Image 1 (cartoon, helix red, strand yellow):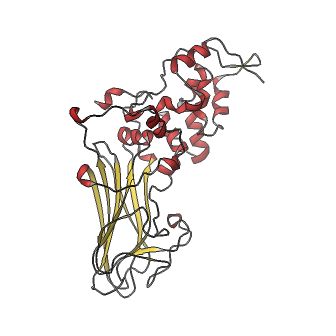
Image 2: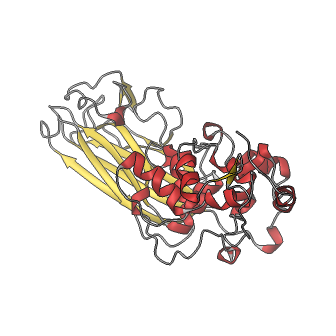
Image 3: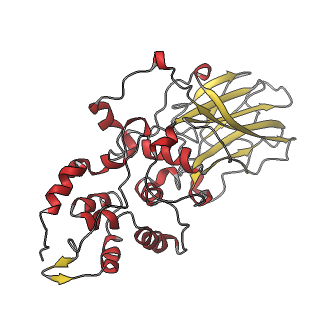
Length: 357
């Protein structure tokens, strides 16, 4: 089966500077200056014909809906018509409904693309090593009082984990605290340009949770804190040139997400500004918390731009016993809530560069 092209295709490629190997560069450039497909591109019947048989748009939408999300943007290289179809709400509505069995909100097409292309941000877990299965890798200790943090291969003095809970990723280990306050955190950098743009443009709620338990013979106090940070704006005199082409290629969303997410390194709070913070406190007495309890927090209605999400937990026993009798924690989760985004004030899928000002 073949298809008919006109000379418009080559002109279209040159005008949009598309390359098959860099399809997604059209929607991600350094510093979040996105260039989304222009909904006003002039269309013709080019792209509708297969073996000189005309196929309506609805047929293409159905066919395209079976294309893997990682490849769907490549269809836009064929012709102007296909270029516009890939950002139609009816296409992403079909894909969304097939998986979730419900009608989605009328959000911009690129939010659905991110959901299916990068599901770990919305349906997975942005925390690494959330049960201590890799000891303290990816974590930074802020306070290590008493006999310090410890990883137990299995919870001692409390009930086993809840059965078949995905938060524990099949691990059996947990973190346990002592008689001095033990605090550590993990920093999640929004290094993926498209995800960072969606967070700052559409403000999805940011959810965090963790499972907590205590020993049968000692009480304690546990605290879960979720904080959003924003990097200080660069002054004109300290501004630097835009990323080089090579650096841009490293950050483009076409790359495998496991290579760019999440970037974990030492966090310097003095260089960052607190956007919003929420904290949940859980206190219990001996024999009151041997069953695992899920502590949850949600951040919403944040105004400033977000560059980092910091998950922090702390625990201490309330009887000052030598050893590790403080709260146990495991199964921490951080994710974006896709369904919390609203289509209010959404007029088009185009990115307005004035939003950066």
